[in-house]
Length: 118
Length: 239
Image 1 (cartoon, chains in turn yellow, blue):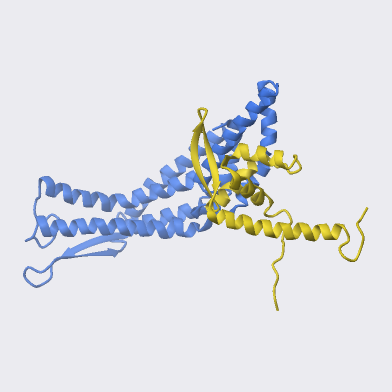
Image 2 (spheres, helix red, strand yellow):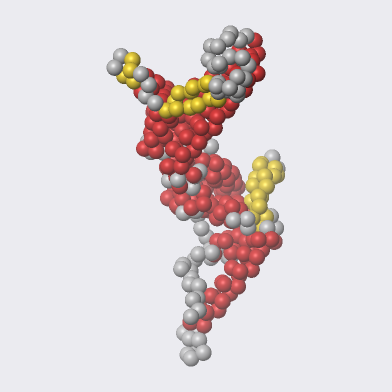
């Protein structure tokens, strides 16, 4: 019998996914990252801005990110970058979320047996 | 560190988050708060309003604490395995320090007192030789106290409850108080001397065994600073 992985919590992995996606494009520090999430999701996803740091630190601890301290305009900031392991994790998360989003979309539109819910 | 984060720091430390992770989190939160405040001021708010708005945007104390506490990998070893940190590790450290101290005694005996039957007062030594023996002696007697202070510092720094630190202090005091060192030459002429370590309460002085007296002295010297540090920390937090 094949045991399938379950999705214990629909929101699990969302912050990780967004952070990895943004950091894959360019290195950023926490404040910059939160503004980017807000801008690129049209403020649909907003979180208490400080809670991004435990996620960043966790990803760094797992080897998905690296950080370096850099001084810009007289301010010392911690910049984060995605590692090759982080890129692989992003690919896995993206795949999972694409499947999940497609499944939800199918449910909302009634799938192959029904019609779209007005 | 910004004042709003004092409470957060205490909550994280009490929840068992390692101090280095707490420090880093608060440093980045402080930087983030400064950025938010500057943004709000640029938007035309007064400094006080900007500060309030920035704090709201940063997130509530409960959310900020919960986000960090839920990441189990940030927990300190003292929170994960207190029995190992406060009983096993101190005993291993003490054993290591005593090994070095006894090696100093044995090697000093071989180098500076080759003909003596024992390294204890068998001959008077001066200069470097005396310094060498004194270093070993200081390490032997000082190790339990240094290890005890280490236990106290870690416990206070990480806001730990008193149970495991106390267990560690009592163990260290017991070991330190009852340890005895004996040295003798083998029967063969010119044989290599050997040093042995035992644990015993020893002979009674004023109704109390010598070892117990020694253990109580070590316990006082280590527990007192720990209690004072705890008190100072509690006072500084309530101020």
